[in-house]
Length: 225
Image 1: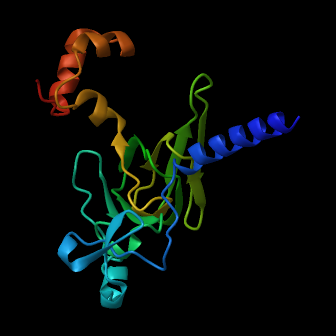
Image 2 (image 1 turned 180 degrees about the vertical axis):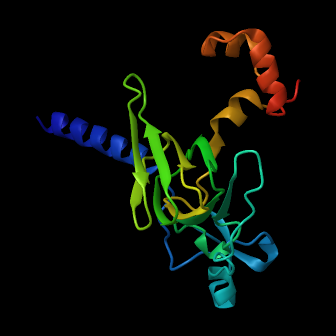
Image 3 (image 1 turned 60 degrees about the horizontal axis):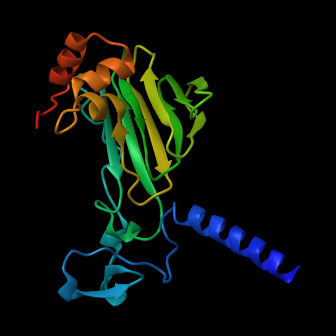
């Protein structure tokens, strides 16, 4: 019986460890301000960090997130991400922030995923149609129209989007559960890869004529190997 309990405990610990490893590690100190110069750093918790005695408020702050961003691009949106690259003090803290600007009449943050984070979004201006798709085999589409003050959660790693359905600009802010959540924009990744995915693969996967695949790969700027 003791061996059974030991085996069960081992399995549970293994599962817990695998789950924990899927997220940013917990810090073992108050903070670990990221630094690129190892000569001016100490090695803490597996990362080069600025000597805590040398940390300043600048390492933990960013100014200008109140300024509207340019949405004059093909999708009509602009994402300003504040991760560890913009705020070094975020290193090891497992969180980041984004401002999202959307052009009137269809500004879109196109379908994408964050491979390392859950996202929680709050609308402060405008009206957004948002949604995400669950994983196989169900592929359920869950969506909602959001107004100022509304909040929506996009679960870890799932494909999601936001579309401005109003005649005026829209603004939202999002918190993400990683210091570096990453973004994979689906269309760009599939049709704009470097080198290109074999068109035969995409034609079969998406049930498209290969001429359409070639057109899409050219449209998204894919590079042949």
